[in-house]
Image (cartoon, rainbow over all chains, first blue to last red; front, side):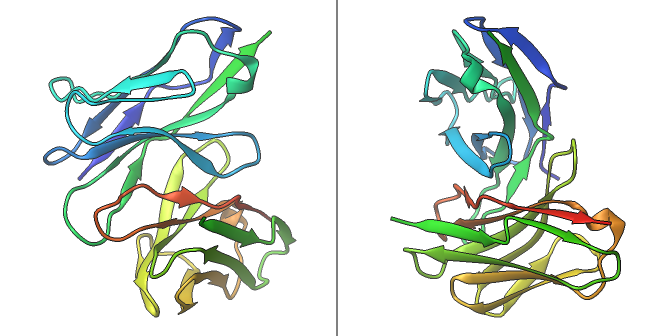
Length: 114
Length: 113
């Protein structure tokens, strides 16, 4: 079945450092791909998404490119801030009409220190 | 605009007690609705989803159940809680079909003692 694999956390960075959180997937066909962010004590918020190969999703300085050849959707940010500290989830959504189910990775915790 | 509410925000319950968590969505009609659980230090586990009133699909066998008595209301229940039911419960909705982005509520922190 469909699955998502994320790098283990926590990822600990200093403010203004470059961030990469790896995400690879296994799926039939070409699913849509998502990054969600969860701040402490809150629900998940959609950070960015890409719906087809070579699409780049971007938001709040974060970017991720849908790479079909490597089945990856790595999250990057050029300069992280303390406020970016959160848990980041990679997810995919299968194809088809009607009900759409998201498959999530286990999440990667990011800790940014001043 | 659409909003999603969950209550209570936090709950502490003894083992063996019943549970009822509620989720409501405003500003949309006939949404797909979802219940997830997030155990400490773990990812999201889809528990139930619903594509319409009275239509519930279970993803994981367990002592929890879900109901959808109204179009925009989704309830998670248990007759007798277990210690392993502790976790962060998230409700989500999406627009069917063709839009697979999900929108999450603020969550309920459940502690079973």
